[in-house]
Length: 294
Image (cartoon, rainbow, N blue to C red; front, side, top):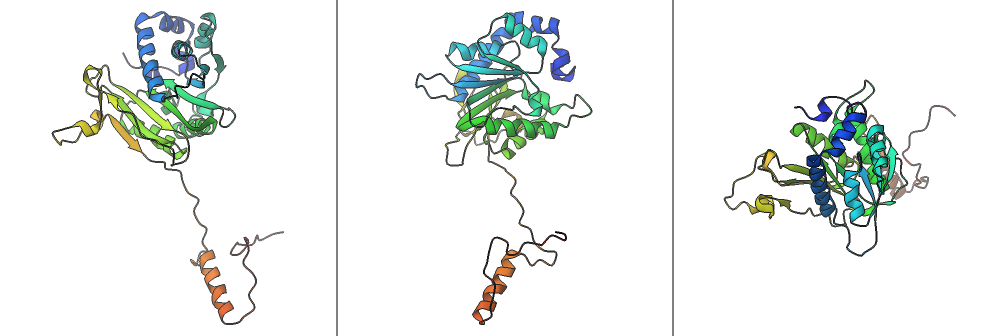
């Protein structure tokens, strides 16, 4: 059976019957609980006894939010499916619930969130469910708003199922462009069923420690790509940790058509000063092109 994101948009697929079926399944409950515990572990929150304010993006009926509540944290849940949120209200989950489309941005105040998790939700942004949907613009809006609302030094752990390598690279690329540092941690990379990918992102300047934790391998022990003793390199599908750097686009310096920009103009003015000519002082307007109208 194909994955849900290939069958219908999330607000259509998770109707009332599907939402209740999803929530009452003991198998799904166990999987969600296990993944949520792992995401919270990768979040690496300080063990100071102070409750944190966390985001649960794509919270659904609140299964992953229950894990956050059990650890004593406050949380805000986002989901696009009203049926899922109705079930969460019936279950009396502790978090605050918002009916919203994460592809349009999160709309939270800057720097107020201590961490964020997402379980099996980010891959939905790679689909164009409507004629107005552009996956690239939706990923840009999501990661940009996520970066702004997180406190500096906070982490976001997004577990996702990518359909292919290109889709995974697109998700990581837009996360890096938003200003995040981090990478992908893959647990159980050699298992077709147990394999789980987590995008671990850190918000803040480059001075903040952005080292990634090790992935889980066989028998639950930690492993990384450096643990290969035979010297062989892993294929893309078997990598356990992928580290990426920030890739924020820089503003291009404007130059004139003849190639004589501000630097050239400042150099020529300095030469004229040495020759004794009366040269206007340098200001922030030096080298700027004047408008053609007033």
